[in-house]
Length: 353
Image (cartoon, rainbow, N blue to C red; front, side, top):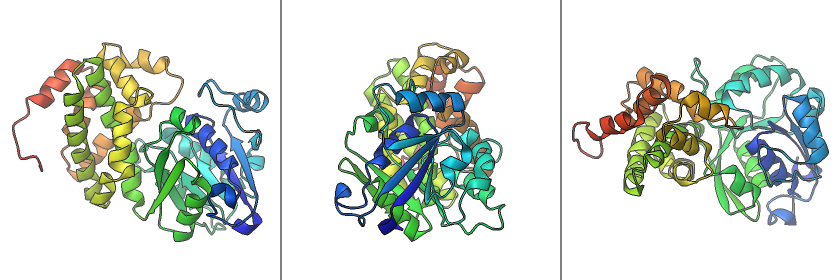
């Protein structure tokens, strides 16, 4: 595959889809990526569900979703479904989690039987409580003619505006399929992006989804001017919650101490450009959720994912007080100050609990 070149389709023209397309367009299969692959060529296609937005992007190579980024001329923006995914060797799913199932059902008939899939979305589907790779598997698994190369997840501390500026970053590619893990690692590794591999798909996906909920809580603290001592304590206790649920669901505890866990959580909670943290900050300042979401161009995955995580916590009987407080602020009208006060007044306990 690598010696013949790689055909890559990127689904989604939000921030992550845009930066993935530009990054992948750099891949040469040889010296351009530190000699990690074999000489070859790369074809990168980019698809969005809105034909109007995709057509404008194709013409201007710019997007209001990520100011400052210019889409590489090597990326072909596709307006037809078959053109986007037909013949692809690797499909990158950068579609928001709550819309992922609909997109994959729409495109399923054009997906090649041997195409590998890598999800870069972070969230948990409402109602089904499925992780992104589980949604993709469920849709593609209905096709009896499909012999899938597998499904992977690529996650880590990756604030999109920083990736657009090619600032140093690291990610983790996780899959049950060793060949697919290696392929994702090769095509995404660059001078400024280092990609590690893992077999813990569950842990990497859960870490990426749940950190968004804690990031909303961190933003609320920022909005209340609670200080960095409070926020750092929130991170530590938030990671304890994430790990408890993750281990209960079969993930490896060490995954949550790594790049996809603690690394991603720290970036999301401290970066001024983080969408979930920024939303929380607005809530902490007294703004209503509906107004904050209405004025945000990009999807804030942590909001619907908070519902899903609370459902998972109940299913697995895991105590998650920070997540519960965020849920009450988002959906039950709890005043953020009261929510923080409730967390601070919980009964004393051992740290490991």
